[in-house]
Image (cartoon, rainbow, N blue to C red):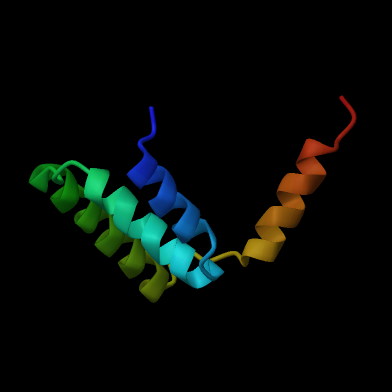
Length: 80
């Protein structure tokens, strides 16, 4: 059950400009996050580094979001 104080804070937050609301939401969500697992963080960093090397060396080519979105849209609307 939401308390009167929390209700007041929420009401005030919802009246703020969009960028401020986003900042507030980010801070609240971050406060709920559990500490990161160092092994998982290290594995993700290795994967990010590998993918960046693949892009930098030309092993893989990036596809613009617009092209991906259009292809997904076409695939979703194919008559089956």
